[in-house]
Amino acid sequence: MNPSTETADQAPPFRAPEPAHCAAPTSDSGRWTRRELAQLGALIWPGQLMVVAGIMAANAQPQIAQHFHTTQIAWFSLSFTLATIVATPFAVSFGSAYGKRRVMLVLAAVGLVGDLVTVLAPTYSVMVFGRVIGGLYGPVAALTLAAARDLFPPRKATVALGTIAGSLGILALITPLLSAWLLDTHGWRGALWFLVGSTLVAFTALLCIPETPRRPATGRLDWPGALLLGVALSLTIIAIGQGNAWGWASATVIALFTAALGSLAGFLISEMRAEEPIVDLRMLRRRATATVLLGSSLSQAAYFASASILIFLALYPSIPGVSDGLGWSALHNAVIGIPGGLVTFGAGIGVGRAARTVSPRTLWYAALVILAAGFVCAALYHSSQLQVITCSLVIGLGGGMLMAGQQTMILSVVTPQEQAAATGMASLLGQVFLTLSSQALYLTLAADSTTVAGTSFYRDRAFTNAWLLMAALVLTGLLISAAIPALRCTDDHVSEPADVS
Image 1 (cartoon, rainbow, N blue to C red):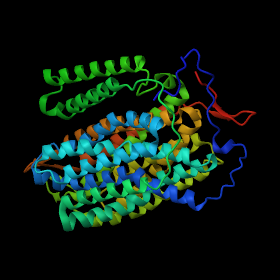
Image 2 (cartoon, one colour):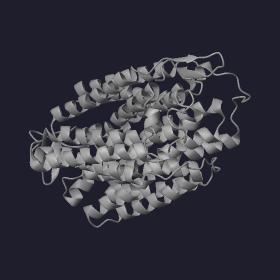
Image 3 (cartoon, rainbow, N blue to C red):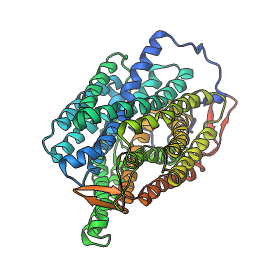
Image 4 (spheres, one colour):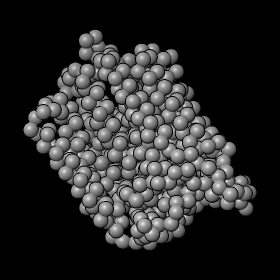
């Protein structure tokens, strides 16, 4: 994934692509052709299938946990995410070298196999194995964004990226309704069979886009680095998840954390020596790039992880002394989420258009403040339908701005040659933070829970603390983002950070 073979001392001065608000006129008229609209449409479903799969999986978790009588339901999602983390850097590198369309088709085919193993699994262990295979589809989300930059003219790329990201709102509107119907009428297997069909549709859509330009790799891929990162994350989430049960000071937990730190150290050493590192440490030495990638990835992870909180709150029953859920049906919860989904979609498209005249950094700060406020609102007010809808509107607005704003920010701080590497790194960091924040979320919920017949039920304080945790993560992302240097327009219309050291 290293965009250049030059050493750090030989690297040319950093000059990022111009943001839309100070762009020089181009020959592109701004009018979309039918071919461009068709290509954009073909990228939306494969790119956002991860969102659909996440919603379906999250809604199905309660039924799956009770069917297999397991208290380890967290691994249903974590195994998928870990596989995505390991696969993403290689997928991005292969996409640059052999064409993003070709790589996405391979990943979609493998993901389809994983979906079939999952839905047909006779035991929970086999199901988790299927989720690992299915997680290899995950890098398609990053590759579709990178492909959009290759397929569309510069002045249309921002709108295309905002539309792809903003489509999350529509999917977040439709998918819960469909998921509710499937779960109510066909059970959890019905929901998972829908994912099988969805992956097949994504594969078909990818056949409709042209191949992207190829940029041959400059060295050998960093296989040891990817494996060490996966081991470090796996050991960490096991230690976090079992900390309460085994004791945080127990020899086993301490050994797990020690081994995780050792694997992380090995990963960093591997990155410094690799010809094609997973994480280009030279790129992260620039304050602008490092703050954008870290701040945006952490905040986005909190946004995605937070979806599980409302699902547990809404779908779990109200049992005095045991469970403080709202006891809604899946369909009722889906209907309640419609207003928030519409706001998310509109916010995503709005950011893509506003970025032409407003600084991406200003939009980004606004997104983080609104999202954090939405989480605090949900933490304090979640006992009635009106309260849930109101807080979801705020979260949806901040989330839509966040999803579209991340891509705009990345485009503002990297060179065109670095865009593919930066997108891949953002996806990798996002998955890493999602894994850790999800495990922290489950740990927070479990701290105020009661286990009955192999299923954990949560008290009101668990939901409050979980949302406050998500707000804290977003505010941490905001603090990191505060260090982003100001972007300015130079005389030759090329934007660069005020500080690139």
